[in-house]
Length: 396
Image (cartoon, rainbow, N blue to C red; front, side):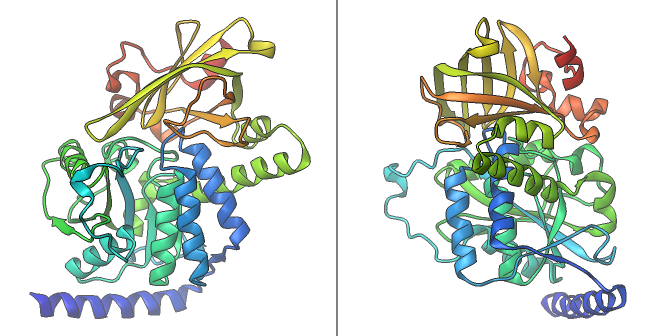
């Protein structure tokens, strides 16, 4: 069996190289400034989740220090039979560094996301041609670029959600029935422990299993899954998602540098709306079952001075209410900017008195189907509220 896998691996490398030469692949090389804008844009699309911006920036600096080349490829740049892999983190937004259960465990030198991809590649015996980010969030995107650069691969200009999401089933690959199973999938943690999951009942069961592994691994594991052909990805992903994050991140940076209005710049670039401004008046959160759960209230000022906005999050901001009435909800994006620190605000970093702007951005149209909304709408989180598209909400 191992000989067969090795033979398949060698043949796969040859086919990809030959096809790429025939196709004349033109991939965009990214500068360090491009990458920084992508990470900030991804933190905005993280809707409070997707990993902390500071950790993502640290990982990016590590990658840049290794003098790797970072490239971005469209779905049409690679042969349709080429295979991509999707690495992403699973866990809560706090790492439990002071937990004595983990104090004596060694920290692996190799980055866990890279470990997971290498383990999966070895298991299936086939070379990956590209990396697909599992969601648009700061840490998920930097994981994809770190892995891709380390392996000499491009990152696909697409993702499986168009934003950050809290659970495995919150994926367009699941919603739109990509004809490729979730498994085999590889899992790695920061202690260097790895495993292969060869079969799960469904995505919801996979969420349960991976969340348990995260809890046992200081609230974070890195997963590599969906070893899928490019042709099977196209009907079920958000195309140009990374370029979208780059454009929004750049607009945010340029507005700050020019003394403009960063929130309005993000809303304009992302076809969204600045829906609230004010100061945080209440906030609370807790880690539960591998998630960071909480809510916070913003007391309006300026044109919003007679209102309050409440936001509920499960890692990501998913529900909101204005003066007690349901407002913007998933799958649309609820993005919060810290106007004091001048950075996207990630959960659970709210503080009473912090000034914020809240931007709502429309979800990709592939989230608007009945099945998609049953998986990632308000009722999927236990709220007795029907989803209303952003344009309907804003129109009142």
